[in-house]
Image (cartoon, rainbow, N blue to C red):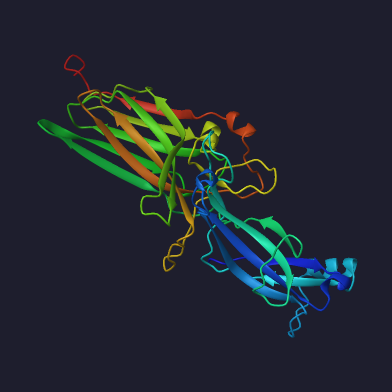
Length: 349
């Protein structure tokens, strides 16, 4: 079920300032797709989209008492307080920013939201500092952290001029994870080839697709683990291990191009949540689509090459236990278990 929350609020008006003019409320999405440093000779790399508008004063004819919170605020503020309810479209993009480089100045690329209240004679009157007030808001997406689906991927690789094959199986315990929770990666290696597995690498990867550009794709490694436990896996041997990685960002939070939740005020930043779209919904051209995946790579040496398996998963920020920059260094990736079986030699046989 996908639904968009209504932006509710209260406006306190001054009769002397209004002078029989109207008051309008707007939800504006600002999409910045280029650096402010490159804006010259009137060229702007920013778009403003009016996603919702409503006349607040004079109040509409329909009797809308507002929510319980609005009613309490109106009782406290008096008769000059008026409620508003602004409904965003279901396909409105989420609040996401891309981390700029250390040499870049100005507003980072991304999607921002604000509620703007303007005073004018018509709804289309242009607002300025003297007749408008605005407040930054954030559009987020939440998903239930439950589900029975268990992502699994099995890769079989054959080798040229070499008999047999190498089989890699990667499984996750669940598909949806909360930001800050460990992602347990179950790895099974079955070596039916003449190659030898030297070591295993595990990555947590964030993918950010900027829908406006065909080539607008950022792929950032947000967590990694390199282990040689249980290796080498000789021909005929097997390896089973469980690795826990923490996709909280760490040093990746300051990497250029990583997608973060759009901050409000001076709050600290965290990784952006995964974007979940209904099957029948098209991508918004002004949005940034976020996805995550776990990548497992078997290193076979200089001549053997590598075997790679990748599994997508959903990462959600509930907002209750937000992982900040300071907290990401407290927990390290670790290996939970490892079990290796080696083929019997002729002497043992």
